[in-house]
Length: 264
Image: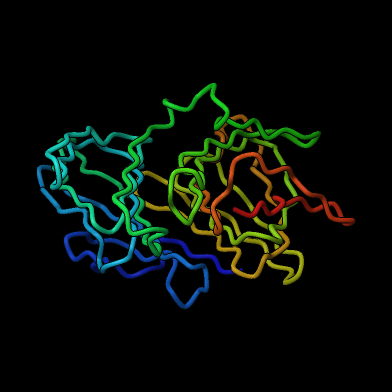
């Protein structure tokens, strides 16, 4: 288990030097991907491209708005809040920011699954009410998991947007997957790691967030603080390997749940 708050991290260039931000997951963490939060200023234009051959690059807009123009065919796409652009290594685009407060981007780099030109552009709104919109419910509360990237999309990681209601509690251990949760908005979530007797509370506002990295298949209990002023906790969840989308929760004898592993 590793946790990182952006408020504690130095700001530096990403592997794509057009972007500046905070590294949340490094290669040394053993997650098979790296990720960052980047802030892009108003009216700037940056090239979204793979930092090296064979590396996919994925961008989720936490806040802000801009326009993408793809280098291969001139396709235009409006990148807005709760939209994702996922690209294989051979594809790139220019992003121009139109929102006065700039843009918060969550950026992921991962090994390419195949040497093909794979491009996914999708929003959370696109999948509401579909089979990718999953209600997570138990006697201790509920939340929603919106699956923006699944294995069928052609990437090695799965990418979910998760919302957990105030007062909810979940006991989890992903024995078959590595998981990152990045809390970027809403109410506070507290993680209790049973094996290490450590409790970590998320810190999230309009500029900062907290990464919870389960790099050792850690047992953890998630509690979202309950008060009249507390909102649902919003986080990005990345799974390695990517989810197929039809996994069932597999409960261990001590009550921790995780996804079963479905092979290709």
